Length: 147
Image (cartoon, rainbow, N blue to C red; front, side):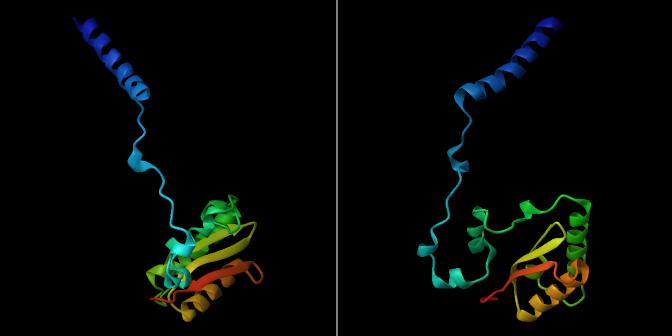
């Protein structure tokens, strides 16, 4: 009797994945949804430094993204030090500023993303420059036009 139960259990375990494979498990609701082209957006959305509108430019390989982060221990350490300094800084940076992209490749740091004010941008750049060193910093921070 126990043998029949074991055979039935094995048959069930093997049959379920096979039935999914045969029936197909593609769910139409999970297909990628394309963003509307920039020409269909309002001017405010184009000039605002909102990450969702800017992510369109990240689809091509023209700009660095976090996926381009260097894998050497030195690159990771620089990125971690900048992020840690930014998060624990007592200057009161906004949540937006604390979530900028910090990408380090071969010791060169790129800062990208929106910040709420020019003073936040200046403070973050000074903080990153102190860690990365003079000449190792690329500023791609954008001041939000609609706080």
